[in-house]
Length: 269
Image (tube, rainbow, N blue to C red; front, side, top):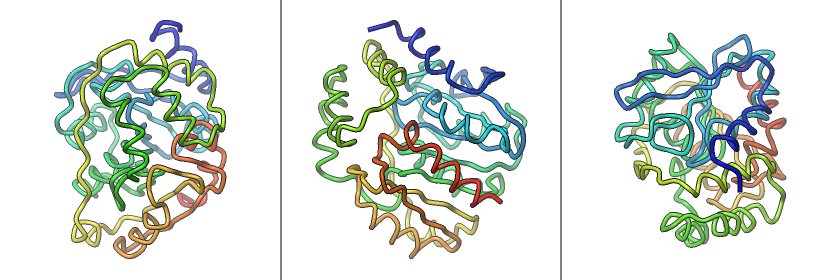
């Protein structure tokens, strides 16, 4: 297994040519942000433990029409400061201010989807459109089977435990080798425990008027995706739902980015 920094850089090398890595000072800690492309500003938040580099495939599909910003969560695996993140919306607000961004398209996957939704509910004036890829704990609880298989990872992450979870959830579909090497390397360090997600209330969701795109995976085993779509449609005033038939929860950012980008372009046009 290669060192964490080397594994991180190997995935980052798959981003578009000219990608910049910026450090933004926030009250929550220094935050590393990958930046590339030109056009409409879009901020993409990664899932727990995935690092900003996980958006490499999406960045390649989006960079010709979007200015892509992808931060590493503070306290999570990545190159941001390894300090405890207690208020994700306040952290993200400081990141946007530090980047000079006023109004954006905001997207997130998994835990990053929860942060994106939570932030958008608190700061709708800064979010032009919201895009949620397999968002966790937003419209439905995590599946019990997923929680059972994820518990060993939470209790003590090892390469073997992580591989077992991915193999089960993806149905054995291969994930990008360089990104998987990075995921194995994250297990060699101690990171901060994340803020536990709390589902928004029905009242909060009904009051959110910004256009929202919710994308689920047809083979996801992390949650009841039919319920996710149903609840989103019943509560959000302006929502579009799409499904990627071949995607699971963990394949979506790296292996299904072409379809994600197509849905996003259609939604943002």
